[in-house]
Length: 140
Image (tube, rainbow, N blue to C red; front, side, top):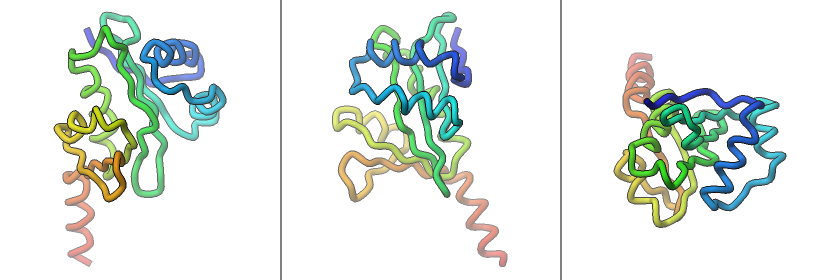
């Protein structure tokens, strides 16, 4: 069973432990606390069989959202969890931006992201949401 929940302040230690297990470059603790406590951004935790399997943090920008970090624990990878977590953000925003490592760029390209002029910066355009904006602009 897969479930995605909104990350709250009480999940801080769980997210931190997952980050350590994935051996990603650790962001300062204050940054996550700011994201969760001050609601500068928002996060989601994905549960697999009721156990935390990964997380995503995003920061809203003026006309888009920036994915600060997305991570799935190694033992839960290759189960489609990263894609489900990513879809939670992609379908609710017009444009999504992220900076990623070179080795995972092909995975994001398969998900619909496109390369930008800056290496390792990828952008996803939600064409469904953009069409509404373009149609409204043409009518004016």
